[in-house]
Length: 249
Length: 300
Image (cartoon, rainbow over all chains, first blue to last red; front, side, top):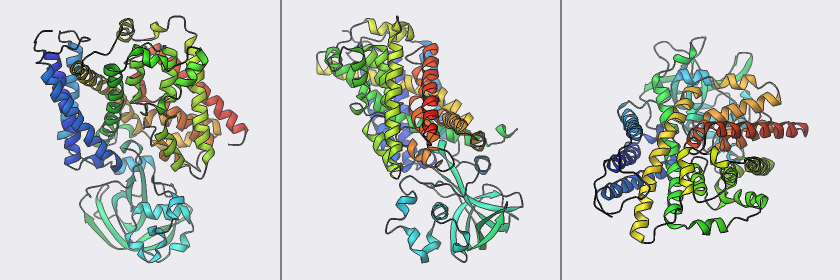
């Protein structure tokens, strides 16, 4: 075996290091929350570190003794093109501003009030002791997902009249110019994002789709599209900036 | 047109979410496959599998318990097994069975469907049968090497013994990881692009199609194809459709998704020819539709 510098391996190693750094960067800059569920964050970071280590070691091996017997020593143009595409996509991933999924997508997927959501807290789990859903006087601390889960357990809107509400979400404008305060719920990653929301009985006025708001008020019953449901009678609608973790789980 | 009315950021977010979710699992699969290359002798591996055809497929269907990787991780593993001398038909059984018949997926399905354990049993049992039947059908092919891409077919002719010395083993391990992670990532880009474009299309349309149980099954299969989510968590996604769809349709989602989705198809292309991939897709779809009809007959 002879010492020989190999450009192909060097380029591949650099791309691998690039992928690893990309995954680590997303974790460090708290951007992973836009893409995958929290359980995966540590694994993603770990794999990032692993890829960087492999990349660094194998870039040494591009300079050192051990020839990989399976590889030819020439540069393969299609492979290098693939590497360039990967690097370009990583670059796009780093430079494009991170945005949560939009209200338009929410409208198209249909903001569903009756969906049984959540991975570890489905309706069976939420009846466990210590669930916030059973602490009736703390309804201000419920997220939109908690409310929707509660509605799926007990769908009768009359039971919620007068309950205090304080939720954060983005604005989805309704056809009658009121709005829905919505969030996306993620099971695995942004692919399966499902929008959920509570209707707010107030004209949108100066609010726009995708504005993030903090809505406080009380629940009341209204009939929308021939369906009786609990809606928010707001006492205050405050515009806020997008939270660091835009999705619910 | 609704299609173009989304902000570009939605496509990008979904595209990257598929990619970022898949890369760690692909890497785990590549690590397994690279360890096999660098440290495991071919004959050790082949000794574990009975010579008799049916028994061989039966044993290989449980390999997911030994190499617990989900559907994106097991493509590099299957390819390595083929290169180490496993028949193509048994590799197909492994590819189809392993994403469901492994402890992680069974446990997560059970957690999601605690209140309906029959879903867990049926998911595992039907996946098992489909994987074995598909494998046996493939085993009837007279020239299985024609089903493989040229580079894989060629690699099968060489004998790959792991190197003797530890430093060489490590070098081979590193080289294989580097090469396969990049190859699979490249393949993923295509699958992620198509999936991103199609998942921004209306999901309610798919739900609206599902007027009869059979249509519901087809709708859920399309959803599984497009969403390309990992078999370790798909049970929780299926849970969201409980009540709106019959159990048979949810099962179609849970069985079809791990075997076939856009992401898997794009990665299978690194190993198999298009014609063969298409044949597997058709076979698997047919059997899922049939089993769904049978389940409907029993009122599920």
